[in-house]
Amino acid sequence: MDKEKIEYHIRGLLEAIGEDPDREGLAETPKRVAAMLEEVLEGTAYSNHEIAEMFGKTFTAEQSDAEEAVVMKDITVFSYCEHHLALMYDMTVNVAYIPRGRVLGLSKIARICDMAAKRLQLQERLGRDIAEIISEAAGSPDVGVKITGSHSCMTARGIRNASARTETRTYTGAFKNNRDLQKLLD
Image (tube, rainbow, N blue to C red; front, top):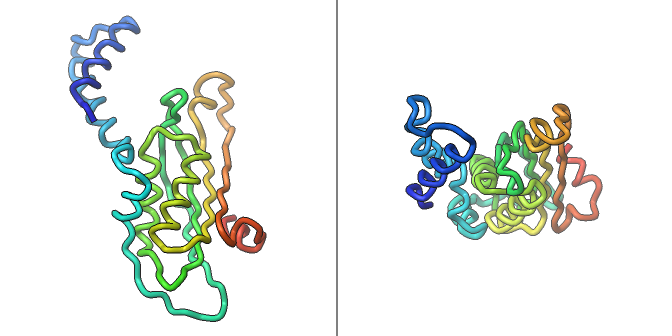
């Protein structure tokens, strides 16, 4: 990430909206914004494959005849909409997958969701990215992802519908046509 270029453009943005970028409250803003963007958009630096490798620590799963799913709910993330650079907030992610001989460390599931969200995103793509990364990291084609969140491009501008929430679901493998598996995400 080119922080110097970000600082330059944030200074220009402040000038373009009629602010004095040299006044006391704004003098350090370009530097602060560049540091913030480096942090909140960290996932931009990595492909889905690289995230799967980073957080792909697995453990041997006890095998049984029954198909058992690992389910983690209410993982909190935030992201930025690629259309308006607006905050997507109050987002929760529910993830389920069927282990195929290996299970992911539980913290790795939350870390995958967090890193995938740290990009300019669409909520629909975020669900697909998480499913793809979990599938690769866990070695399972069977993944379900449900995301619910608020979008400031809907709540703070435009229609200004503060109570609007968006829900997306992504199903791969056995989750695609199995309503019982899909219900695990509720």
